[in-house]
Amino acid sequence: MMNEEEECFISSDNPFADVGLPDPEQCLMQAELLKYILMEIERRGLSQSQAASLLGVSQSQIRLLLEARLSKIPLQSLVLMVVRLGTNVTTFRQPTTTEPGHIMISLPQSA
Image (tube, rainbow, N blue to C red; front, side, top):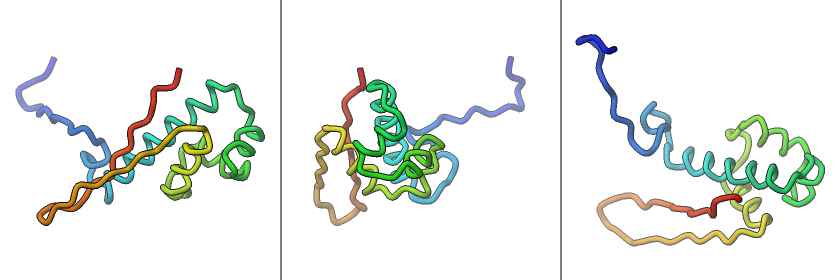
């Protein structure tokens, strides 16, 4: 039960923006890519060694993924890993003169 002094906060679709992190769109994209990669590794039953080989990275980078240490993994590396999993990545842009652009990535749901 809430008392009258408690306030409600309506979240946006981006928790990274809600907490005031810099570059919240990039943070959200990295998190979504990481989630997809980890779900695919689990779905395929890959060991760390097998995942590293398939994704073209070192086992230490796989450990960084498993620990969700996204500050150590560039966005472009995550995108390449998704491509190496056999997933098409499509980006698009709509030119605008009044707002900064946005990158959107749509990933399939892992089975």
